[in-house]
Length: 449
Image 1 (cartoon, rainbow, N blue to C red):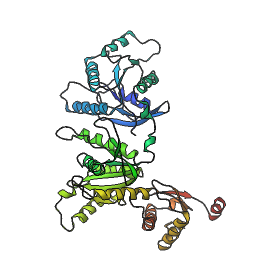
Image 2: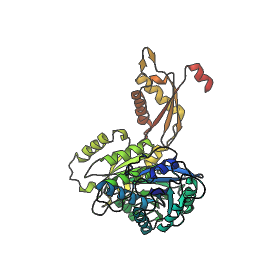
Image 3: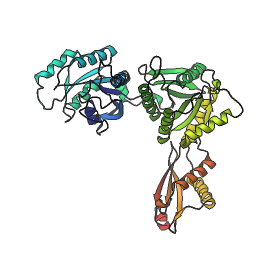
């Protein structure tokens, strides 16, 4: 289940970024007196009264402007508003109620989003000044007096926000506990929605649909061969006519959120365009998060082929995503259904690999053979000695290696050990992690085992 999302909007220079930083507890957004410093949305997880939610900082909204940058900032804010479950409209008591405030308020009322009105820079406690009451004219209910700089009234503001968000968005989704969550991610127009529709069109066993707004990720649960899956489709983030730069950046952010909450990540690549910067960013994030991953090259039916076409494309993918050579590639057509049926075999397989647990004895047999083939490195006459290895956790498989001096463990030798482990146990479709711990001598080792 997606997290509750709160967006902070308002005209430029009313203190949105200061409030964002105060709520998340760290200086993430740039704070400056120059209007328009925050141009893109910034996302970060926050917590209040034990409930976690996603907070979005946006650039200032100038309702009427011909400036291209300000137009872009308005578009970014509109996307954030559509994504949010509740919106905080920031105003500034020092400047009073302005026509721009009224225009933004009208935009929010038209969008139909739950909104809490915050009047910022009320820097003293007690009764607010008389100027505070003119903000009732915006028609958004009772304003909340705050000082984002000093934190005054911020707790009251969040209480008002939470009162407008359904409680279930703060709870764990127990219904998905036995379901395998599969994120379908990639850049716009790669065919993610077509792939989901192809899967669901074939299965016809949809259990439930849980959707956010029209531009939000959609969770669809269904059964296949007695197993329950939840597909997270991050498609649909498009402007009419074309996809602009701001929209594409937002689709990345939404994809990253989907990766966070999935068991298996299917990275959909457009065969006509190859690996894009967005694809690399999403794949890199999935790798860092230790997610089981599959690279699905879509629109393969549109490619003119000869005997080497797939081999050449595979080599290009490996070159662009060199950090993810473990991820299997599948060449599909979401439109015709070509090889889509085999996709779930891969999904189940890489999830099993990501969840694999290897016995310590078997690991150390492989370790012994590996160190006999290639001696551990040495430096200035001192050689690395590896005592033993054990698996600490799964998802991804994480191994602890006990050595005499971890400074001697070179990255290249860890990569060699990884390749030896993969050669024996497979671990396809999953990253592998190593933790190197130091033991000074075998006596110490013996006393701790």
